[in-house]
Image (cartoon, rainbow, N blue to C red; front, side):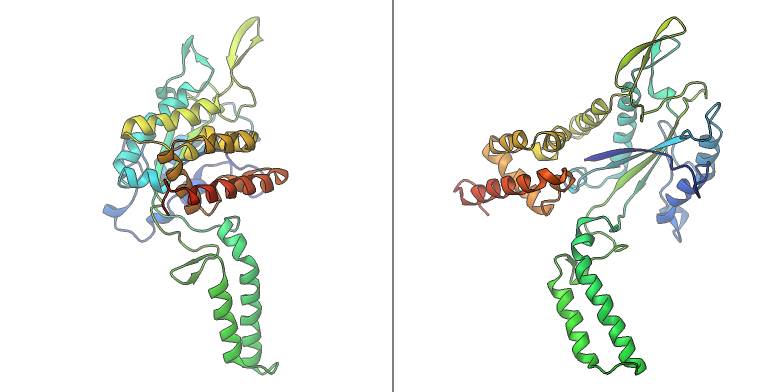
Length: 341
């Protein structure tokens, strides 16, 4: 599971309103029957209309400056393993989101009127999306890019031949294109993977728009705070501040596991991904020391992600080491009689 927290985009052509973002989240509803549409929801309500979301978020910005985010976007991306475990059930995803937002509230090292922040202090709206498309920065698109450039060049050559601008054999050029598509590393049912193409498999994920201000429009609650849990003296009083991101990410995983009796593998945990980034050697040592059954599943998960998770997010000077270590572990596992492939 991947969870991201991003501030509202500000400046330039970006609007101060949440309208553009809310309308973007309506893209999967275009052309659908009202009964088939996916609506926004919050902690207690269902079927919330887009205009209500915009009104609530835009109207909850008291005393915020123009350059301050009015809302944050949280994206919850369950893996295909997790989605398969819950049978891609939207009701279960909603239940998970509501429990996760309790953890979100509890991750603020803040108080309101002397009490800890609760989920009732958080103004948020969530929406499930069931599709994903490849983006230009996806590994599949990046690795296909040299092939796509050659294909675009050949298609341009065909157009020039057809217009009589240059001599050429159209049939040969078309054969060259088919060969490039065949040799490209990433395809879906024989079709060349490029930006904008829908991804296969279970792709359900959740977008959550969270107001920067609390539900009373009185207190600013920023999950993007540069401060971790700490206290500072303000107006002669000690004030708590900060947001514990590690607690939120780890706590969300634990909620999913407990709620749905999910047996999380080491390689799909937030702790493991964080360790790989900070201490690759310790990560691979931990991977080597897994039990036979867990190691077998770990190898399968790593191979099915095309070694994308999470190696390619490492600093450049650590990528080579990571790939070499991972290759050694997988090869050793494949040779072991206890792990059949």
